[in-house]
Image (tube, rainbow, N blue to C red; front, top):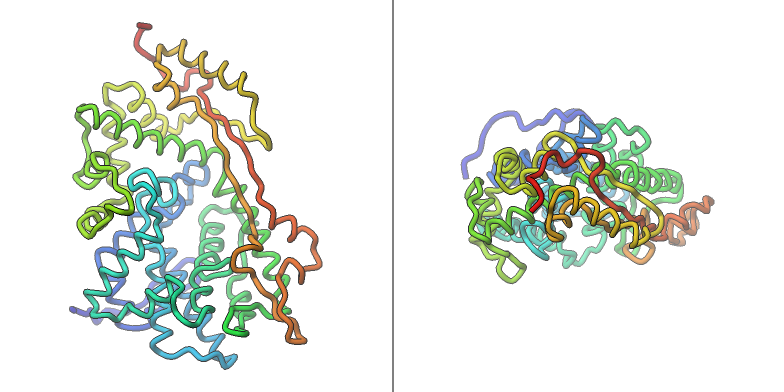
Length: 417
């Protein structure tokens, strides 16, 4: 494969200069599949709330790789055995962990491809690249999938204290300007160790873990699940749903070939083959946003209105509560909007809807964050912490939302009947 002799350094606003650790990593970054991540936003439509949140999955993948390099150095200093092949595998796994994200990241994860997670699509990409690189990604794939014998390696890539989370919290905090989400990722990494084949945090790092979990909780409620960002993403999902409905009925829609392919075909895990993967690889934020700009002039009231709402940030009103709203109030809103705009029940459901969101900052039932005591004992961080709020963070918090138009949000509609 052709290799460039250019300086292999990126200037990152979070960590400064990031070096590319080897020719394989450099060649993976050079592939069109990875370069596509420059056109996939890290935080979906969060820029409608935080104007600076325009960073991409490309940024995040490089940052996560940089942190993995630091973690490998720290663990080797503590006499943890990591061979050169395993080091390369760890870097491959974390570099490519998000390569399967579709347009606007999580916002549309199941809108274009049904029941296929971005992790599953990432695995498809890794297998394809592994063939092109003559098997050199095999160790990285095994680490990513959790089938590699050394469990701590998968935990560095995918756990409740992995390089992915350490980077995105620090990065998203920086680009949104939400200082409360900032964490000291480098300090946390220096506290890592391995015992009995599993990743642990040394006892002196317990307060850094507490701050990390509190920052994660804050970022989810204040940023990732912010009600304005939530309603914007719901509108985007509804927009694609309406477009698919119209396309199925034979109406003409403008759009790029890859986007129209996914509107025409319902792709599930069983049908996600190499041909579908190649089409998916041509799809990014640009396809979706260009379509939305074109669809804002479509004759269908529902589709054109949804598109204009997103483009002009004239969003639905949203109420977020700790318990479900009264069904009678919902039906009252639903019928009022239906009458006002002369819509059918199916059309009204695009503008008046409800749902729920969940968040658990720390899941004690899934790959615990274990603290290594000075006496050699290993205990869960929730037990090691002297703050009672860490136990509270292990409970799932559910909030309920209701969205509906307020005032003249939907604009003008055709006469009744």
